[in-house]
Amino acid sequence: MKEVAIVGAGIHKFGRFPDESPIQIALEAVRMALQDANIPWKAIEMAYCARCYLPASTGARIGAALGKTGISIIDVESACASGAVAIRQGVLAIQSGACDVCVVVGVEKMPRGFMEPTTLGFEPWQVYMGLTTNPSYWAMNARRHMHEYGITEMHIAKVAYKNHRNSVHNPYAMYQKAFTMEEILNSPVVCSPTRLLEICAPNEGAAALVLCASEKAHKYTSKPITIAACVHSLPLYASDFRGPIYQLSAKVSNPNPGVVSAKKAYEQAGISPKDVSVAEVQDTDAFNELIHYEELGFCGPGESGRLIDEGATEIGGRIPVNASGGLISKGEPIGASHVGQMVDLVWQLRGQNGPRQVANARVGLGLVTGAMGHSAITIIKR
Amino acid sequence: MPGNEKAQKKQVPIKEGFFTMPLSPLENVRLNGSKCRKCGEVFLGKAIGCENCGSADMEELPLSKRGKLYTYTVIEHRPPGDYKGPDPFVPFGEGFVELPEGLRIVAPLTESKNLKIGMDLELVVHKLFEDANGNEVIAYKFKPV
Ligand SMILES: [Zn+2]
Image (cartoon, rainbow over all chains, first blue to last red):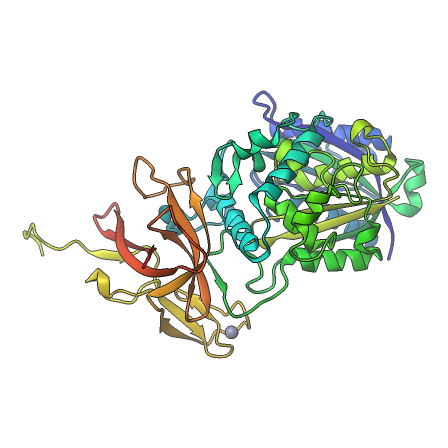
């Protein structure tokens, strides 16, 4: 299979920008990525735009502002995994020979507060009955896992503590503020056991990558980053708890989509969990990060509490996770979140992340999950 | 009955197919489900296809009124969208309730305190609100036994 490389990476800070349109936000990320690759827009052959909450043909509008070159620009959506699916489409386009160079951009501009339920796919009866608080589904999953394996609220708070502390060094994060354990544990409960400082906010932002067939990457960079795997899964029957579902089987037990995606991604990349130097995973609530340790094989089932206790996932630990500060501090513009994870991992592999640099990072892994159980993983290596 | 001011209001289900009929008296109403004739999986309401095996061969199956709390949380803030619960908002429990038919359904709970995984729960069928046509919209929740 043809190998695909990342030759340019760009980002627009995640946060809230009332004076900027989504197109302006996206343009900043795309221009930065093009400049990083030292490639003009007119040399780009295709583009994919990941977004959920923005209008149809957002990608076409971004392209128009860069110059109407007539190329194919397609919007893609797969809830919080939209960015990963856009990257995957770019990889497939290059592998198929449809193009040699393409741009992937993720962008979102979302209102404050809980996500609008009907966009997430909740039906009117679920709205009327109040079953539409998105984080409540994560909280119910956390409560059950805690019951089965003895993970504690302290373990959850430690994840939030680590990620907020890492964010201090990330100028692209919405919040760059460290909190004490006491502040985290005393922050208001959103949906027990989840607290305000342990949860991420939907917000605004963009991130972009320039992808290129590896055989031609030398034209643009001396440090190409190889996409070793990019996979996307939907859940097997009854294997995912996320809204807008309203029931699960009590009889059938299938591996959850994170486990399925991890297996596929490691196989595609030809690596095992111990080969991962640095990971960015979806910490939309801090408990989710713990679950992802287990899904990704960084520890065994139910052992994620011990992993955070040991400090293994801190910068300088055995397997640093969310050195960027994670979505807890960056916020989650859902079209942009995974592309943003990969931008930060590209910088990690190039060794240009300053105080949050993971020493000698060779393999980076980004993971996202979303409504309907969308699950995606991208692995890059140098 | 035109002219009869004491005419009973009409009850309508919050979602077609979720309840056994008739919807009055409420205490006789049960949740209604569909059972796949091919693989035996059970779904709340009227399933149009089996998510487990793909079969469209379903039979109606009224569900038990008693269940056990599989997991839960407490909704501390008004849910987004057109929530029809009490105004001003009152926090409430939300859980997956495991029914003997082999499924776990998401449901509001009558309590927000002293919830415990494994506790016994009982179905409460109730009027949630009146719709624009003056119909009583019937919904469900579960209460600790
Ligand atoms: Zn079936």
